[in-house]
Length: 111
Length: 114
Image 1: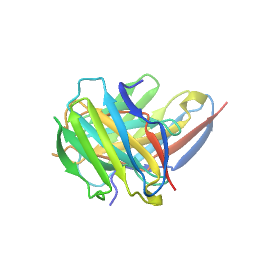
Image 2 (image 1 turned 45 degrees about the horizontal axis):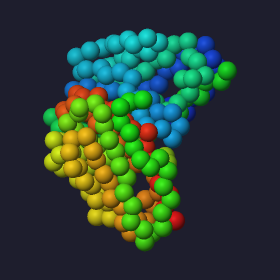
Image 3 (image 1 turned 60 degrees about the vertical axis):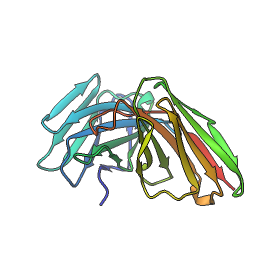
């Protein structure tokens, strides 16, 4: 099964609204990361949350992690048109070095 | 900019061509990665190098051949590709291959195989 499945696949909101994206995974993890990708570009790391953390903030970003439900959410507050991008969660697979990415959520923020 | 550069940014090649993708990282990292990103599919890890040694070859066809001459440079040599190999190829680096490390991505090479 695919680790790091994001939900929804696509999200369209108005500028100023909050955007929430979810990620589910299937096996135990040491950490979960969120990345952002502008169209046709490379991924940019946003935030990393460790398995013993429940919530983390970075600017307008808030990430939560619920290891009992094997899920994470990324909240972007007061969204801007420049936040339009695809957002991916990525999980490690325990003791090895792989990051496994989901298919991502395409966020469109309309001005 | 993330400190990882890739060239070329766009590449069109025929199935009989031989070409190479180049990646360079200016971050002093010890691990480098090649990923393939196809439309509507998750990012696929292709190769991992740690201190210039290949530590992962994720069942990639032999028509893709990686080379890591030093810890700052990574190449992906392409030959006899198929149209289904058309994709965005992303290079990334990290301090080590620990799963806890942040990976820094280049802008990618958009490859079209005709």
